[in-house]
Length: 249
Ligand SMILES: Cc1cc2nc3c(=O)[nH]c(=O)nc-3n(C[C@H](O)[C@H](O)[C@H](O)COP(=O)(O)O)c2cc1C
Ligand code: SF4
Ligand code: SF4
Image 1 (cartoon, protein in one colour):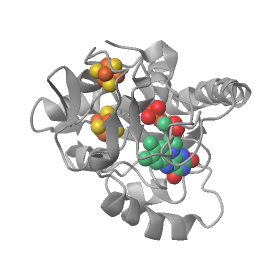
Image 2 (cartoon, rainbow, N blue to C red):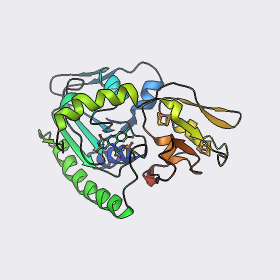
Image 3 (cartoon, helix red, strand yellow):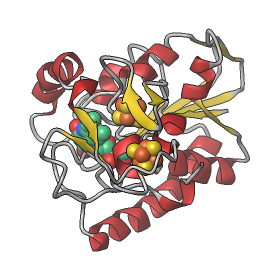
């Protein structure tokens, strides 16, 4: 089984592309958690994979929490793949504390962090997706042959970023009070339906953020068809991104 977490579709696409090549199945780990207490067992000779995006040079807290419910039997082959705009820092080395994988990879994918930066140019988005597709092919081969690999682009200052910036992000940068919605919202409810932690409720035909903090997956802001959602004032002039093949309504 390949479990994934994904705000804007990159990690979901990676999980699905891998599963297609390895004959595996995929499960959205957020739905798994929302449906009740998660408990996952990977037996001897079984293969288990986790695919997720990098947030501030770390794994999302929801993914760490999910991994604490996994039991790996001796002989199970465990792997992890992260998707990031550019660099993962020491995220995957830290992640091993939660999930004792044999192999780990990073894949550069289009940037979705519109709270901090603009989206990539469409040329760069296509270039990253093309390179990722080729790398997925080699990851699938390594998974099928149970080869031990650590192929993660950590980037400069990786240790400091993961040790210092990641916890600051988790403490200070996940507040939902900065989300707002303008008059172009047509009340379609997509943002509430796709929020992986059910932090959005439709109230009077408009979304309301009903939890103080969220995972900051940025699915709501990037996928709103009306571009009606902002986070503070910085996002008004920035683009939006999601992986088109993963639309679900
Ligand atoms: C809150 C947040 C923090 C991010 N931090 C990083 C980062 O530290 N390094 C990086 O290369 N990309 C970072 N990104 C970009 C995403 O990791 C990247 O776009 C990823 O492929 C998105 O995956 P998804 O579509 O499955 O959600 C961040 C994105 C978000 C939303
Ligand atoms: S997705 Fe956009 S248009 Fe639809 S309810 Fe949410 S904010 Fe409104
Ligand atoms: S509120 Fe938006 S950014 Fe936060 S978890 Fe839900 S969909 Fe993701």
